[in-house]
Length: 90
Image (cartoon, rainbow, N blue to C red; front, side, top):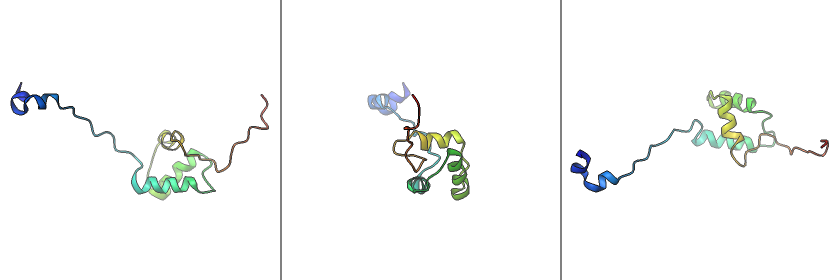
């Protein structure tokens, strides 16, 4: 009732949104990671990306987080070469 008295019906109907979690990798660090992922040398594993983040950017990030940031996002590929399935037996 106090909110209604102070702000009226608009105050009661106002929908508030949580600001959300701050991304671990953002801004210029994210841009550097994107650039490094686009290089022809690429990365051979998520562990290698994790080590690069620690040495180059000073970010100590869990393997699972590296996978979620790099592996799940469309357009990111840690391998600089296409995977060929021609030698696989079905």
